[in-house]
Structure formats: structure tokens, C-alpha cells
Image (tube, rainbow, N blue to C red; front, side):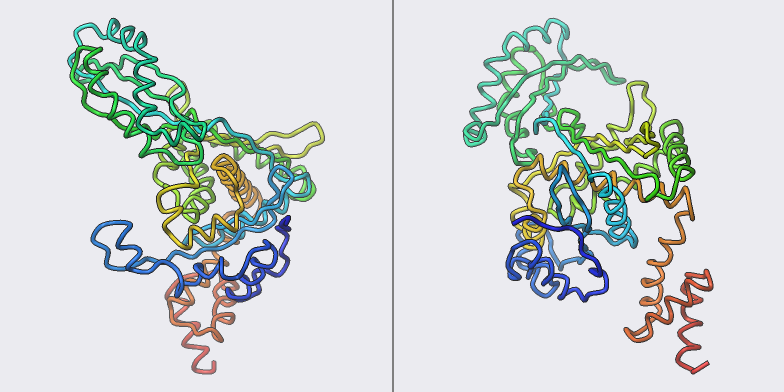
Amino acid sequence: MSVNSRLPGFRDESPSARRALLAERSGRTLDEFRALDPFEGLTAEQADHMIENVVGVLGVPLGVATNFTVNGDDVLVPMATEEPSVVAAASNAARIARVRGGFRTSSSRPVIQAQVQILDVADPEGARLRLLDARDELMRTADEQDPQLVELGGGVRDLSVRVVESRAGRYVVLHLLVDVRDAMGANAVNSMAEAVAVRVGEIARGRVLLRILTNKADTRLARASAVFDAETLGGADVVRDIVHAGALAEADPYRAATHNKGIMNGITAVVLATGNDTRAVEAGAHSHAVGADGRYTSLSRFETDTDGNLVGTLELPMPVGLVGGATKVHPAARSAVSLLGAGTAQQLAEVITAVGLAQNLAALRALATEGIQRGHMALHARNVAVAAGATTDELPHVVSRLVADRAVRADHADQVLAELRSGQ
């Protein structure tokens, strides 16, 4: 069953009604989304099997971004985040992208790398060549650690060796490049690195120290692009100013840090919702933002096409998986993956990257027009009002006053609430 990601009025429904609508639109049963109810989701007992010293479970709001079309197919995107405006902004940007066909995505093979560090080598360059000569032997040993991965079409694809100069000495560093299929792959490649370590040390005639993956996943890239209609964005002046805002992020690391944080607002929310490793994805993304010249820059690019429309592109490492870890253990993550409908880790990576580009466009459009605070603070006002103690019935009045007074602050919320309750 195909999904229609256009859900007008979705935000006006209750959480339970939204779950029912998602089940209807996605062709899945309501039971599959039961875990998204906080009373039906991850239990303390389940959490106790996931990490150490468990004392409870921390809830994070999980929303659904609508309007996304990726490679011609509509998708409903689960996003877990505590920050107001993120889900709404992504949905709105996806609606704009939809006018010109939505997002186009692609990705490289799901290859990640493990490193083996060798110390105290008398002839590093000679050791490098000896290790390369032993390529077939070492790759065979590594593949023997995970026959199931090899059976599924994955396994070691190549081996490289680098000589790295450091303040503490000169190291020989061997890399295993492993196709991990639909897994994130950390455990698989770590086991492979440990399995070859002794033999690597013998061949290099040195002492092996680190044997672990690198989160600089530059062999596992995902890409997204979209054409954003100039008229829908607000006209040629808005397009021009978005290009200027993006250009500053390319040139200035101070702007790039916040620019890329905006991209990660969307990416991290989907990575977290699907039970993947947010820290690995974030580390890889920010590492990728450092160019060959050593300068930190924007992960995305914005240009105009010959018709004056805005073209946005984004490329970054995306080491996510659909098997293993919290993706399979956490009941809400399983529901989120089911809703998203990605059949492979590469499809998941591509959708996540499309969300990152949508989030980026939404932020730049706000900056180029009304400023970032207007929309964000309107949504943040709900949090402030709730924190002040506003009831469900009082909430709309308090929020509208905070926004109208342009004073979304705790002290003003207290004042508005006191006035409301006193009948003033």
C-alpha cells in the first residue's frame, strides 16, 4: 500500500487520534503503534537489559513529519526531539519541496572502516608494503569472523595502510573497509579488527594498540537534493537571501557551526527515533564538515537554477542500520521503523539525509525572512506556559498572550496566568 504523506489538520488531532490516522494511512495495524504510547512503550525492565544501572526511562517527544516525497514515494517520518519547531519546520519545508517533485537521494555502499594501530615499527614504510602484500590473508581472516554477513553479501571489501605522524611518535595504521549491509556495523568491524590484530603486529614487526572502528564514515555517504520553488518560498528576494545565508556558512566556521546544528536537528531526531546511534552520526557529520584545507564549513550547498528556483544539496556520512542494537530491542524504535517503511539501511540513510536538508532549508528561510525567533518562540511559548502551571483550558489564552506581547518568558507567563485566574 502506498502512503500519502499529506495529512492536513494532523496537528489539530490528539496523540491517540494521530496514531489511528497513521495506522490507516500507512496500511498498518494500530497495535503496531501501541508502543508509541508512553504507557505501552519501553519498560524499566526492558531498559535494564539495554544499559547498566537502570533506574528508569526518560521520555522524549516523538512526532511525525509529513509532506515528504523521497525518490517519488511519499514517506511519513518519525522524529524524536525535545526542541519545539523542528517537526513543524521539516514538514513545511517538505511541503515546499513537494511542489517540484520532492527530494532526490542516493548513497554509497554501506562500507565502514576499522583501524588497527601499530606502534614501535622500525620501518613504517616497509611495514606498510608488507601489510598490503598480506591483503588477501588478512581480509580472509576478517571475513571468517562473520560468515553470516558474508552470506548476506557483505564482508571486507578492501584494506589500506597509512603512516601517521603524531606528537608521540610515528604509527602504522591499517584500515579494514567492510560492507556491513543493513547493520550499523560497529560490532562486526570491531570483531574483525581484533581478529587480525596479532597477525598485523607480526607482519609489521611492531606492537598493536587500538583495534576499533572509525566514526569518520566517509566511505558510507548519503546525498539528498531538492528544487524549492521560488514563488512558494516567497519570491526571488527570498531565494537570493537564502543563497547569501548559505554562502556565509560555507565561508565562516562561526556560522557553519549553527548552520550544521540546524541540519542535525532533523537528522538526529530521525536517528534517535529509529534507535540508531546519534553520537556516531553526529561525529561523522561534523568530521565531514572539515574540508581538505582543515577548515570547518557547511555540509549543505544552496544555488539557483536557470529558472530562478532554489537548489539545495546535502552530502554527509550516514552510518545507520535496521538490524541489531536498540533498533530491534526498543519497542518504540521498532514502531518508528515500521512507520517509515525503509526496507534497507541505505534507504533509511537517504530519508534521514532528506530530512536534514528540509530542516536546513526551513531554518534558512526563516532567517532570510521573519527571523528565526518568531516561529520558534511561538511554539516554545507552549512549553513556557505549561511550566508556569497552565491547564489544558488555560493554555491557548496564555500562549496567545505570550506571543502577542512578544515576551515568551517564565515571569510573564506567571503574570498572565495570575491575571487570568483573578478574572482581570
